[in-house]
Length: 591
Image (cartoon, rainbow, N blue to C red; front, side, top):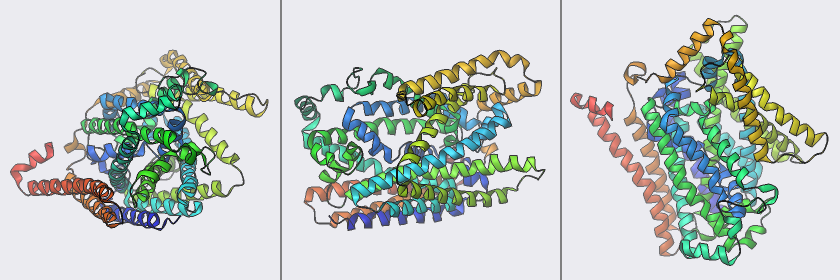
């Protein structure tokens, strides 16, 4: 089967991403612009970026495999994300923005001191490199099986494209490309879900097929302990998944997403937009794998994948989408992974420039770097991170076995849980000593070591993921609570530091005084232009030999993208016009 058209679509998409990175290069005048968009990001731009960075190709592969096997349990994964984002909307997003930081380790320093800051910075960098490279490798492996793409070629192309636009355009390019990627991903995945429902005869037909094939128990939202081996997808799994996803969204490690927005109010609106998008889209995302199980189980089972269910979304998409749009599914999956990778490159480069290097310079008695030099070092660091991720992904792809992949994944899981607890509790518990975060993280690491030792040394059966997750979180929380009585021994200067931390976190941002003028009109114009251009390219797919109905579907998707772009251009023109009329400037700022 020829995939020439898919290759062309992917190539054009990647060129668009590179051009966008170059276009936003001029907006990076200083290190604040490069790493946090100068705190000028609009709520709609930041909110879409948060939504896109919260998903990856795993959404349509591994998690689709969950839906294929266990039905509505898929929704639990993203329900936890939505709950966390709602909590962000209610109060946390505003708090995060009001911390007035560039990186989350900077906040860790404010809350716990320099020792904890450095540990979190170094561990965070290692975890990101492992996580990003594994995601890129997994996407390439999946693309090879589904679309006939060469694994190394996918890794090199995607990795280098993301590296280039993230390095040249910084935070602005990151958020702009994620917005445009979202404009493609959302309507295409909604269309796939609608076509699936039409194929099975609507929701009623879907339920009837589930009943006929005896999948009611497997697809139920709440399952018995014996429905799946090891109690998977039962009550314990649901609790652990909800806890895991909520803590991910509410941890200080996720706070950097809101550093780019104007103020606390805009941050809350961004969180609400991300929550709404995730809550709506997860319903559409669960439908295709379910329908693939009901309609194309034999085709899915024949896939050359370790877990064929992970290809269910792609299989049914290629079956039902009009000719020419299967390339857009590949683009959607690429977009999901690229949005996670570019955010990581930018934010982790910021950690090197703002947390790691300053500490080393203080240690060696050197003066702090100038803002200009920080910007230059930040770009070189972004480039280095991107190339390292590509190299690691290529190594995973060429390794004879998956042992190193499994070890890397386990290390990430073992470190992530314990280290997140202090990053949440520290926002609410004022009277905890400076070493409370280290004690809590260290205590949570103990169950991981016990489990690892029992599995590797004594060859015992490993703990289930829900058990390990809840034990780690529980032990870390108890250890943190045990340090609270030692607050009374804290030094006066540390107590004053904590007072300053909480005062800053709860003090609203005065945008005009602290940041200055916004550039909303410029954001609308630049992103609107690219959205319109991409929508125009997508409309060309209607020229392909398809039935009239399929051509109309293509035009509907392309038209949606174009209309959003045109709307943004119109709004940009209005704002620029208002800026030229002094009596409307005040009205513009309030909007």
